[in-house]
Image (cartoon, rainbow over all chains, first blue to last red; front, top):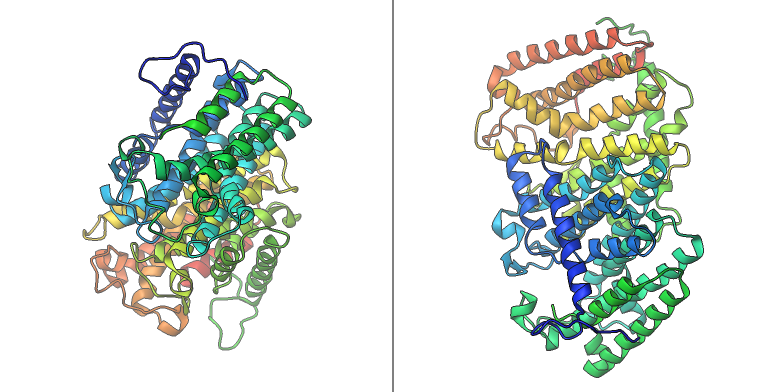
Length: 309
Length: 309
């Protein structure tokens, strides 16, 4: 994959063209605003609302909403149509992090440099804040006045599927089960497809679906997003070795001390980088087979594969 | 409220007419079958599926699905239309019990005479099984071929609203916050309306909605279900004093040792019974103002108010 890198900002990541950086900032601000507006006029009990709000605004990069916006804008301009769906997606991602961090799960005290939800509040509140974010995301879409009933049903169906027991939650169980064994590449891909990949697949698929693209293009985008999810994970594993704590907002080397399966453990660091490159090539190929001008999706693909945090 | 009690079964609850008992058994078997069929052909990881299944079939009385069926059948015969919605409602109720029982919440080892989910499996699995049941319930409705897109959206909207941060989960937070203080009657009613009442309101409202009843009737049924939810809770509190462990499947007197607000603590046992009677009268009045032949709903109201487990 070749990209034109015209406008580099001094001292920034050298792969990030100015245009993409502006795009990411703009979309991030946009989804943040939607998420802020979500609770206005709600009658959520104060403490619960604070806990939901705390994790929603604890430094998330909003990558999934940005992907959804980019997928939509590849095919249509009226991107405000996807605002609630993008916000709901980020809520689901946030709930999964809150529950993942719980003592019975990963038992993490910090995330993105801030105390995790159960450390800032307490465990019961964190469990309920997760439950609340998950449930509220479905309510938001069901109430979204920008979507037709038929569109809402498709969005809700996919959101539930991608985040539920055959999607993200299923991946979390498989991930826990795999903690003390070295998986094969194929098994690892399955875990990551579900745990990390499904919400990314949702973002790409539903963005394009809401822009009313044809079936063939949707299929190609599903291939693209499958590899994009794997790229996200392999880069996570690589950053755990070569990244810096300052940029990641969490300790590096955390995979080394445990039995968790990672790409570098299975393939070596160079092997992991080669595997990532293979995914990038497959993702790029799938995208080129889909209709549309994919400049933002291609840029985001590169951004995902080379991100340093 | 007057009821014709024609066919009493010897040794059974003396308020339970045979007809209602048959009705309850039939509907219970029906929703059990729907719940069993839910996982056929699913690709849920085995351990997660077992955990979800375990709690779904750990002796639930299926009161909420039965109410939903009864509400629908008050107005229309084609009750199979509500099967998936009834099953989804029971899944949401089950998820709430799994999370409620967790060590960070009520820390219960047994429910209905069986080990709680986190005792039978482990805490991480219990958290994820709850998340999975919650999410799967929305997916099931979004996929329900018996409902139109417009109907699905209304069902999903209400299910999310009643179970989310402005409904059941909100009630759970208020309940936790109230643990060390004696609430006023009004405050207690608010907690119970959200924590217990909202799913009961959903059952009654959505049953009638799917049977296409008019707005005025829906409004009356909302009043009815509001009081029905409170009746459910006041009877729970009364049973904690006068019930037997054998019938309840959990220790009695558990409210006494803690600071939890209950009707008997606030009003005395006789006062709690009087308050229940007041709710029964208000519920009955609301029902009589609604269109339809409410024999099952009236019988269920009596059943709820006099149940011994």
